[in-house]
Each structure stands twice: as structure tokens, then as C-alpha cells.
Length: 404
Image (cartoon, rainbow, N blue to C red; front, side, top):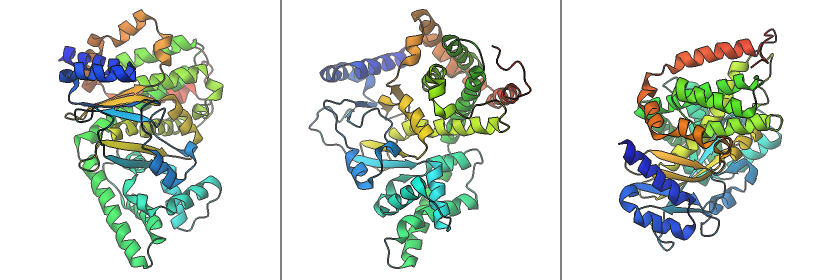
């Protein structure tokens, strides 16, 4: 089992790293190994910008809406598509940041907005036809994933959101209300299905891994160790304490430890903040929402489509800053199992590690040991201990906080 897994990953990595022509040769040569995989990758020479249509329709400033990839010129290989002449069917999936959903809800309730929030709300109000492509997972996951249900307040917010999109495009208000009610019911049904499925436990665990890692990053932030030692300590924590080697979080940490003063995403990590744990939890949700886009790339919301074109819309420049660090160069997903494997454009962490260190932490035996023991980890206990350490270390009265 272990050998099969790593053979698949190595073949996928070779295809992604190869030149365009070699990609086809490798794909065909190893088809028996990866026949269940679809691979979407960036290729600025032959890739097609299928995002352009929707971006032209929306007319939203490009800095506030983006795909998970470092370029929108994409190419996809799967068992039915091995030629640039083969037609493909696409679906657009537009996730809205939690704040944008809240802006629209507040605006619909009569609250005055100004500046960029008002501009974004009005821009989205012009495009009722995109309602079917809107994904409210950031808002719903953040507020409902751990509650296990959608309470009436969130249902009302969702209804207000869709009513705002519909009310300008129907002469009779009862039609707008009927359509909004139908859209709300569909969103709630889909989210409740997720909350009652095994995926909910997977996403809860993923958030706990992100949250515990960001708590550790916050603690390492106060250390006088050099950036290499901080990364090694974070890797040790991932390998031994939470049994999850998250390359994405390591990339974010590497950039943060090197460019701390220029990375505003972590700007609120300052001593004396009484709500430091809540700040870190909110940062963790931001990262979770961006990582969730990787999952959405492997989903087919409509039967018969080949590729789900995912977009994320936000006004939060700190979030945009993090997205720039974790841009994808490719993603491969197994069409039978649903497993997906992101490949990031940035490779800062691997450049910081020696060959011996890479082998120590990333060899196949270590990987499968982490997988086999992950279910035994009490993440709630790990998080509770880290939260206490963070509260103590970030207290103004803690004199030893700046010592490694």
C-alpha cells in the first residue's frame, strides 16, 4: 500500500515538473498507475484562461477575486482528455469571504456601508445570474462546522443575501422572495448534508491541525532562534505532536519568519493583546477557507462537468497576502476516492532544509507512521495546552516571553 501511494505521488510530481510535451509522454507511459487521477496544472504557453469569462462578467477588481493558482492559464489531463482538441465542460464556483456575506446582510437590513464594502455589495447586486455559482462555505463552515447545525440567525443571513441578489431583477417582490427562499433551502440542505457526513470530521480535524500549527507559530514568533531553527521546531511539532506535515503552513511560516515586518497577516500577534487566542483562531479560519478551495477543485457540483473553476472573493488584503504565498502550480485528485494532492508554486521550506533533514521528516515510512497514528492524537488537548502557553507568553507580565 505504501509503495503504491508513493509511486503515484512520484509519478504525479514528475508530470507536473515536466515540460508540456513531456507531460503527455509521462502521462501515457504511466497511465496504468495514475488512470484514476485528473491533473490540473498551470501552463502559460498552452493553458487556457477559462476564468476570463466570469471575471469579465463580474468586473471586480482583480486584486479582490482570484483563483488558487499562480496563473489562470490552466490545462487538465484526465483519462478522457489527452489532447488540446478535446472539449471540456466547466463550472464556476465563487466563494465569498465571510465579511462580504455579512456586508450584504447588513446592507439588506438597512445598515449604511461606505468605501470598498459598499462598492463590492453594489457590484455583486448587478449579477443575479451568478447566484447559482455562489459558494457560501466560508461563512457556513466558520459559523456552523463545530456547532453541527445551522441556527436561525445564519439562515436569515443567507436568505437576506439571496434576496439582495434577486430583488433588483424581478418586478414583483414575491417572485424575488420565492427564489431567495428556494436558494436558501438548497444551500442549507447541502450544508446540513456535509455536517452529517464523514467530511465534517475530516474538516474539523483539518481546522484543528491549522489552528494548533498557528498557535505554535505564534509561540515561535517570540523566540530568539534563527529562522531555520524555528522552522525545524515547527516541523518537529507537526511530525510528533499533531502527526500532520502540512507543507502549506510551513510555507506560510517560512515567509513569516523571514519577512515578519512585511507580512501584515500576523500583524495582530503582539504582546499585551487580551484576545490573542481569538485573534489566532480567526487567522486559522482565514487559512482554512483558502485551503478549502483545494477541496472544491476536486468537487463536481454539476453532473457531467470536467473541471470546477474555483474563485475566492475577499476585501481582506491580509488574506490576499497569504494567498500569494500558497498559490498552486497544480492539483491532482483521484476521481474514484476523492483524495486530492496540491502542489505549491513556492518551495521556500525545502530550500531551507538539507537533504538529510528532508529525508528525516519526509521519508515514506515517517509519512505512513503519521497517517497510522493521527487518529490517536487528542487535538483538543494539544490545542488547550498551546492556548494556555500563548496566553501566558503574550501577557505583558510574562518576562521570559522573548527568550527561546
